[in-house]
Image (cartoon, rainbow, N blue to C red; front, top):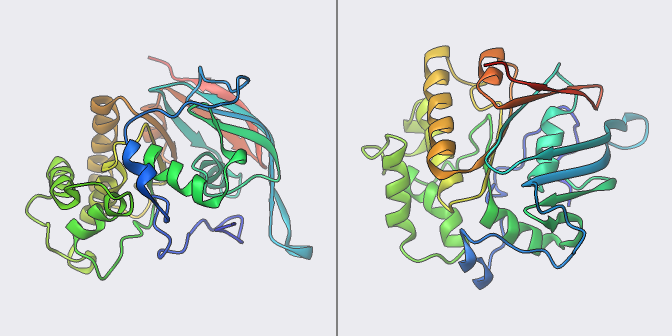
Length: 270
């Protein structure tokens, strides 16, 4: 199932929950790494992409968005995807998160071949192992902050979902805004709720698409500090898309894309 039709506008249907949608009792394995049955799976890397190609759109509007991308992300690494608008950064991030399926190539996440999973299994895997933060927040407008954060836990049939959601909201500094609706929150507060929702299932991987893009500079800096503190404290792998050179410099490594291709990994200078 493709969530996007416009290769340059990654704005998934807000009714499709970022945590992964359909869930069942198998989701009780939150926090445990999944082992692949494939002995050739590159388990040394948290994320391993091999020769990924993807085109989006139809007919004359079809665009070749990703062109032969191979990329590894190590456990606990922070990687920034940078490049001009339309270079394929957000599409690549969505492929890593299992929200886009490539036309060809293979992607392994924690040793699991995402191409081998059907849609329901992929949704369950995403809900357990990957936390997603979107630029536009994608909170459910009719749910309070507490209910938004509890949602992926409830989808995974986790006990004490609301208690755990409260703990995560307190961790991002919103313990006093539990029962406020998104329209009653500032942009920075909404992004904090979105981050709390992403980390609530204790994922091994956090992906963030322009997490400060809709925020003013001061609020954006607070969100950046929060993301990297959570990454550090929880030992998660972080992959983010950004146009902000300052944010990119905070990453262990930046990967520059242009016209759907990786130009070169850039080690960050101390």
